[in-house]
Length: 269
DNA sequence: AACGGAACCTGAAAGC
DNA sequence: TGCTTTCAGGTTCCGT
Image (cartoon, rainbow, N blue to C red; front, side):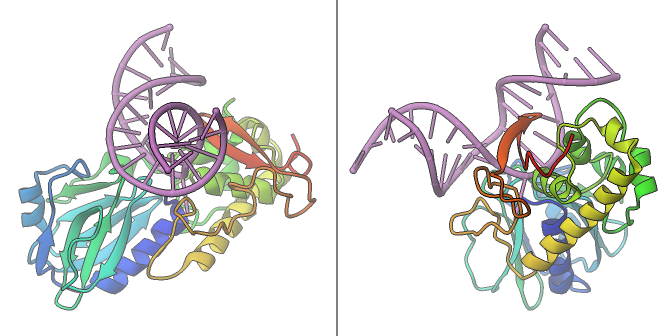
């Protein structure tokens, strides 16, 4: 279940594997992942084309082809791009395959929540255009953050709104709030009016993203929910375990239908 | 307009 | 052991 850090790693990997390469073989079996064009049209868009650039904004990846064609990729909850050998057979849950002269890149997605969207003539994608600033790519300071936080909804839900900031999801929002010692049920408006808290939050978002990228960097990501994965986070998924700062047991609550983990002592209202 | 809840999917873990 | 329930790092749609 990828958020900004995992999508950033996927983007760097795709650059390594595909940039400047010609797509010699493209397999796109019909699935609900594919949008914006039929599987045949999508294959025609990609096959034989050279990959000119690969960009990321929030949780979206954009593959720019020679000419003006674009392919957008969103990993949903369980999507990942991996590299295999060209002679390797289709993997379990393989939804797309892009081969270059030397390697074979596969998109795997068991739950089918991800998307591959074709924009053959470079048409803008609404979901991409609607994204707020990306904390990693665009930078984030307290003034900018304060200007984007408002309203009576919780700060946790505001941080997960992709039009407020692009790329934070359930984990990064919880982790950043813990680092900034901010209670997840405070309203966005209250946080915005507290300059010290906004400063702490801007730094916490930056730190949490950087920490996660550094820890997960590599050619194949394992998401925490997968069997055998260990949990590198400070509070996410750790209800009942001691707060890494004050040792009081962390708690789990539900906000907007999603689990939030936090420390009742460290994170003040 | 805003907000909660369900839906879209599959699989692993926990509960009984 | 085996069946049932719950939960999962995302987004979108629908009804109140």
